[in-house]
Length: 75
Image (cartoon, rainbow, N blue to C red; front, side, top):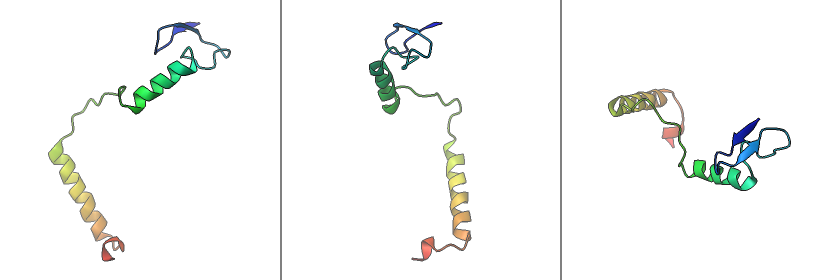
């Protein structure tokens, strides 16, 4: 099977003899990795964040944490 390199669109044979598949080379693989690290590629979040709900949830978690008789806040 032949696929296109996601970085440069060169044809790549999809087989065990292609060590960088689906990329054509280590260079293209590293370019793609760098794009993910720089957040140029992201999986879209379909649900917007409800800021009020998030703050309420964090407040509840904080109260639960404080209510657990732990030593974190006692020092």
